[in-house]
Image (cartoon, rainbow, N blue to C red; front, side, top):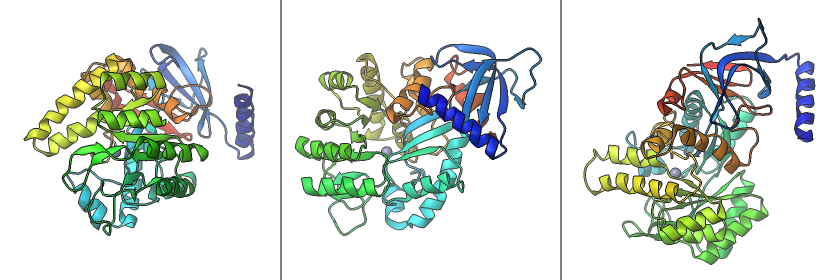
Length: 410
Ligand SMILES: [Zn+2]
């Protein structure tokens, strides 16, 4: 707390030196840090990119911006995006990875980042560039330098897969791949070190995947290999996210010490209990499943995936597993990330639980005090026309996204 107070003093001093003065924003309803109650008629004061105070409005107080009868919430967080991908109905994943240049994909990603910010997402964990090497880390640098606007980026860079288990052309090692393909413990450790050096904030591993071109989805790495990966990541102080859909893949990843499971639909009751015990968080990526079924024209055996995903989500929720918002945007349009929260509510969460999954819960996964609540020290906020705790689709009615004293109006 003392460190936080010191940080504000420094901020205030920085403001004075750069002739910045605080901005004041009045709003009828402000979401309390508990995420379930509203504070009435408040004034939020910001300086540079931080909230400095959140206080009841004084009688006749003059403010810089008055949002009137609106609903002010923390910036949202999506823990599973791919800024370097565009929706698969525009171009198949294989073709994007195989034939598009990293330069083109990176320029496009800067627009994807802005679309995401305008939708109210102030932080994202971008889980793999899918063949675009370290473009996500470059984008993060460009944002830090102020050239590109978007959410705060937490990046995974290349991601790690087992040889022969990831496209394009999994069986042909000479084709460029959507992730770093490795075999054996030494190569796994080297890949983690290389990605850490390349700027990764997280290490992403595929704990299971299709084997070969059309083989079954099965675990990729052994428990020992996953343990080595987590051990090497821990040395670089990086948490690990595991793509896993089979019970065995999920169980190995959890036992090895990953922080989050991506997708996770195949978890048995025993594995869900293990996740809960270890505090491993699930990002269900419901919106991506829905998009893939939509792209298939709601036809064929793929339609069953919707039901599988829904039931798996409900089982995880009932088992008390912590669930965070991770949508897999990139499979579908960037800026439509809120779809994940709408599906969570459709499948049984309360609007407050869904909103928490994209704020307090996700901020904890990122280990960042700068996101998840409207409180001193936090970065920015989002203003809505309607109350999202009554109706989660209110998240689509964004009035303003405020970051760095600038208002991004819709
Ligand atoms: Zn993904």
